[in-house]
Image 1: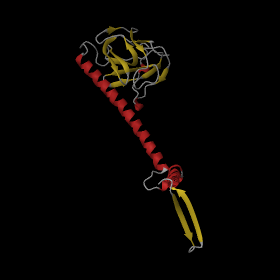
Image 2 (image 1 turned 90 degrees about the vertical axis):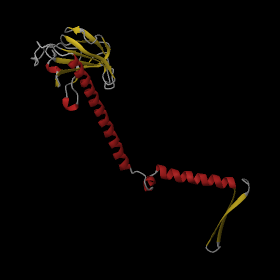
Image 3 (image 1 turned 120 degrees about the horizontal axis):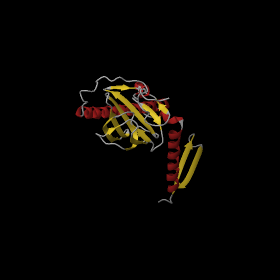
Length: 234
């Protein structure tokens, strides 16, 4: 059957012109497949594809990609805010379980430069509450010591998916300091530390870290305080 000859005849102008093509069946099938492939390529790789009903236009695809990028940015920001809220909830629960002695002042006097610098390095990002950045980023090498900014008691010492190893210290005047993105924790909950004691080793752990650095936050109750206003940084 595949080798039998089949004719294609075209008679034009009342028989005055006659075109006849004889090919085996497999040749006709191959020609048909080739024609369909060429037709598909024309509509797939040329502007003619926009004439197909339902096919998205170039402007539509651009707007769609922009919306996807904006949605991803919103989801990332929401995840960061959720992580921060969960950390604060955990910290608040710890603070409720370990209340301050009644002899300590409820409203501390905070002075600039009265706290030690927790790590040696340059400031890579400052306190920016408007951008949900509640602390200070200090560049450092992985494994560098992280120091307690002042005496206090460790009230938080756990691993966080978003922030790596996190340690929190409650200071006698009511201030709480948080140290994030560490590679290792050196102190446990309940331990007392002095200013300058090594409490962790720096790193770049956590989903929100792109390079080794220390992120430090200082909180007074539910209000964030700019660490740069407290640390002895020159």
